[in-house]
Image 1 (cartoon, helix red, strand yellow):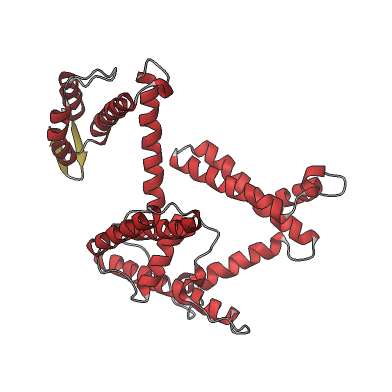
Image 2: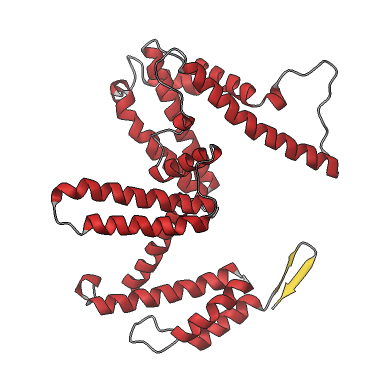
Length: 336
């Protein structure tokens, strides 16, 4: 690979001094940073930038492989060989050996083909977990440690993702709540326990407060899992909404926010939330959500001293402009 060869020269004796000084410990923080930059480019649908960020992430792989090669551990060829063998091992229904003369199913749009495809997907998911668990069992066969179903969940991933994956793994063993409604009393219970620990002013109990807050977060993450909501994505969306609303507060305020009273800040925040909600209604274009929010918005549409005034007439104009249009979905044409 030319990239690997170029990097080998850059990190060689006559290459870049910075590259030569790097170790696994000094580089790992950049790997996490590059991963999140890839994530950010995907969310923004910035595909030219995504290509660049994927190259940066790939460079991290080459970086690690080159350092390992210099230590006599493995090379980039070993990395690719492991990847290839893993693909074959985890896709036996596609890449496994077939009897001579057997032909692959040709895709068609018939019901039979769809049923076969769904069956293969179910088989694939089942094989994937069984293969990973079997490999972990073989790895631990020579040690005294007992294999756990949760061993496949890495400790290095973000905590919210780890909590969701742990809950999903436990669910496969039957250790889980029946539905999301069963989690609501558990959330209230964890809130009460956190409140009880936080009420103490003893600094020594801070460890217990941290533990109770962790229990609450773990329960909320698994509530999201039962609702089909990824907690990491939900929190990122909340962060984005907070950024936009706070920015509107800064724009609308005639004075720096730190010079305002609490009631003035609350008024600015409420106005920013209303403004954001209207934009979302017009952008999303879903009648059901519009009808659900209409009454609340009408009740809140009162004159305010905030610079972000809520103008019902303009709101109705925006709604009509957004929804007095036709669009096709399947064979149906919907119009306001």
